Image 1 (cartoon, helix red, strand yellow):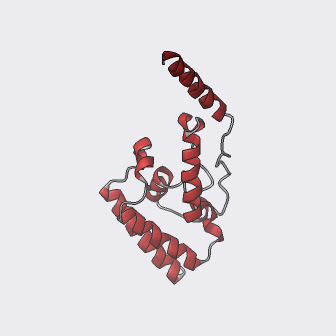
Image 2: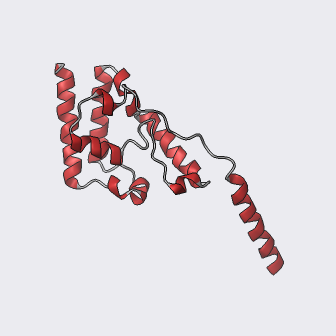
Image 3: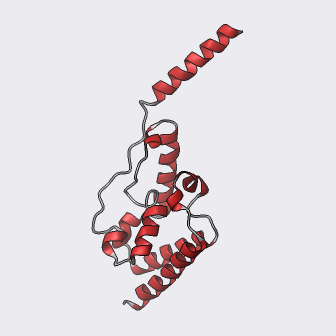
Length: 154
């Protein structure tokens, strides 16, 4: 029985080593003129909130930490990034028409108000992403006022 346990441990360690060679592609594009941080004059507080709580999964630029390089964690993280970008990619902001921007802002406000964003697994590992009630209110108020400015063409 002990021999079987030793073989299982060796196989497990070997499997962990082998899966390290199968890493997903990194989400590390350049911030260009279409990115929301470049295409819009955002208040500093909002830029900071977006950078800390949103942009790792909702843009083409992710700040990877050391443990993001280790499979299977890298696969888990890549899944979150892929899903997040499919819902909202703020790197494409400058290419959207005003209606799409307003819709995205409304969705952002709803997700934050309902406590769905940022997701809990992200906040556990990124303490800066945890939004206080004041920060949530500030972000929601900004989305609403920004939507109005877009709607009126200001």
